[in-house]
Length: 115
Length: 110
Image 1 (cartoon, each protein chain N blue to C red):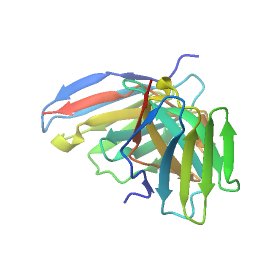
Image 2 (image 1 turned 180 degrees about the horizontal axis):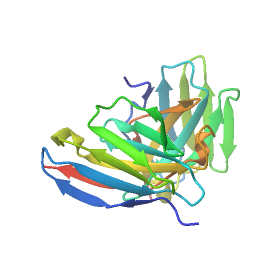
Image 3 (image 1 turned 120 degrees about the vertical axis):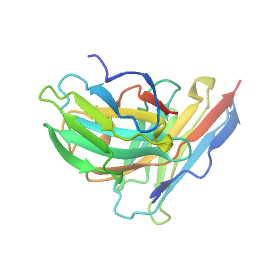
Image 4 (image 1 turned 45 degrees about the horizontal axis):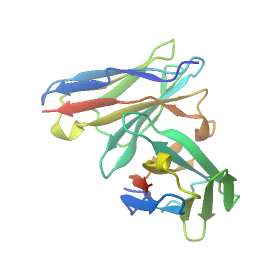
């Protein structure tokens, strides 16, 4: 099986712009979660989608949004970018929501730089 | 709020010796704990986990210890190998909520 893929791998934007990141889960996985990784903060949970519905949401402002399509692919959108949004954005998939997290698989991430 | 803390941002050990990575948590409702390993340019990969009903779980060179009263877990790697050099994230979950620590960069010197 192919792993979790994320596109693009690297992105440079300027403050005020908006960005859309894409994640394709492992085939058969219906749950997709998004995380932000910054130095010193580790991985911070953004949200999880399952069967096109947001199941869980972390403590991020409304500028961060996401959606999931019927094929389980997911997109994450950040509007009005700020310098502090520069981070590695990781997507992870698992077969169903509610299973133990050892079955969660991560993609390589999208490195977003905001100038 | 940092419910999961890894207070050592880095650790350096000699090949063949033991590596001990530590993690503390504050939420007593966490009932499942995991360690992930991350290499540069790759996503984290699951390493080992432990349920709150256990105090030890072993998988080859990797052992995770859980001390619930102290809200502390640790990952032991014995013997350490240069290929173990990576960032290690501790994570704790309660039902559908998982929190990660900030990570510890382990360097194993040949």
